[in-house]
Image (cartoon, rainbow, N blue to C red; front, side):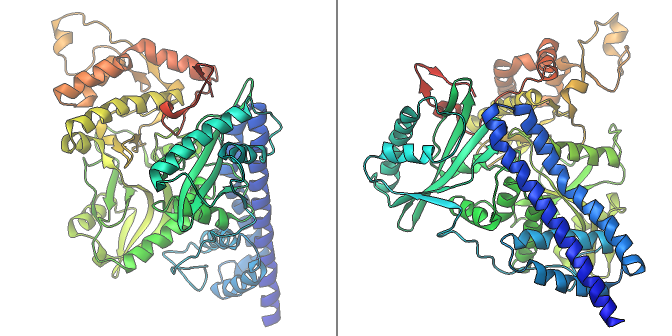
Length: 580
């Protein structure tokens, strides 16, 4: 009997490992296609690849779980058997270079099979201690030193990436990069000398761009170096060079779609990125290169490590309360937690399923630097004494179907986590007039960018937008979001008489998807000087014609450029910009 159990455990462990291996090989195959998409300028096909990759893991897990239930039969829920499966699986994956991903894959399977609440260390791979991420010599790197000129070294870097499309002017690009680099090094380190440049061999692809990522080293100091490439009709050009931590952070922002990058040793790639982005959580770096499920695991572990080393309590988040979500935060931790309410306040008509579908839409869609990445969690447990009394009262009052008390534990069946931002409505009240003006202008830019990516926020109230530490305005409340092409933009019908003008309700029929841009002014709630700023910079947003024009561009399949860096930093050639 015991031998039979061990054999069954080994078979199940082998099936899980085979499924993980199939998943990761397919994942990397999609990443390999990114170079071809870039070289052939197949932008729509790249976006199709992105959706395929996002759906890949869930498809594999679903098939595997179905097969395991058949294989294990009435033992599928046996915790004793799963202890043996875990032991056999641990031996199987011990020599893998992506062992951390293999562990997370296993955890997803066990939580699906056993409906785990909280954490069960005996049944899952759990590590709440420190993690050493390799950052030294590694097969993922190429190392360059300046032998003759800086321009020659930069040109060597560019030529070592094996594109099948030629550079338009590789010598000129190298000269431009070298000039900016020399000036920056002198300003940063008081001299233009350095020890070496280390470049990741893998290219980072996203939408229409390819990014060469590295670091400049001088003894124990490093600065990032990122070279964004565009494939124009004439060939490949280097669009600019980015040399600061802030610039690199924006490229790897949590408001952007995930990169396609082939990483045989993902931990080494993340370790390298962490060396040039020390403020960026490890979780976000895994997510940025497409490993969003393992990024969730890292985020979960980081949160619980933080809870074990802090004493403050979860509290209701600052800003206007939402009609659909209860939002709370931990003051000492840079995240917010969003729980869907049992019932939505009037005039909201969405259902819980519709809200979750909109979060799924954001997950699959190009976020163009204007929507916050949200991670979905199920069956989390926290100590009751970590919740402020008013927060716990609110959660149990408005989300009792999701939040419950079991002994001294708060159990949350479902929530979303997002990076904490400065709510825009508070930002314009509490910051300087200059900062508030810049935020209002970028608020309009955010709406335009989202529309260009076929997203209409639905609810334009400024309380649904936040400001990042880089001063960028982004959208984070998705319960009324929809595709722009699904909207019907209309002009307000003229009032027939005085009674129409003073009526509490429209005197004309209004469909659910009808949008009246003239009405947007009512949703802004800016103080008078800022209203004038909005009118001056974004008055077109209040016209039907502008929105219909954007709809036509989306329906025509036009893919616009969204650069994750200051447009003023882009190189010029022959007196003009190079279009991406």
